[in-house]
Length: 107
Image 1 (cartoon, helix red, strand yellow):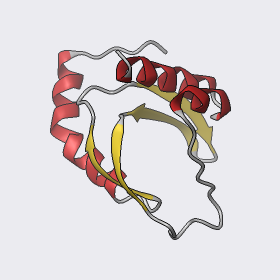
Image 2 (cartoon, rainbow, N blue to C red):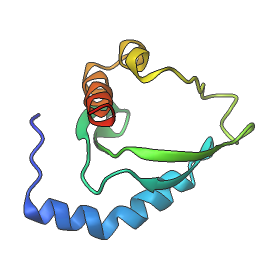
Image 3 (cartoon, helix red, strand yellow):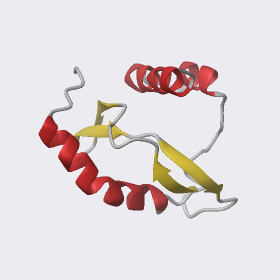
């Protein structure tokens, strides 16, 4: 699915960026401070038991990594250098977004 960022999408992203940051901020494993951009890196689709999910991905700056969190017994957290992360993430669409982030960070 190609990334299409219309003016309306850009305005919605800006409007809801605080909400997105709040959602990421509340993630049980890490605490984030802010999105690196109002524009998404892109999106990907995956199937869950209740239907198909569309995930829009934003780069966020991690402020703090929590040592313990509620889901640590069922979810694994591992950190990789960005050049290796795309190779181990397990989803081609996510790997493309990681590579896109790497290019943006190192320009």
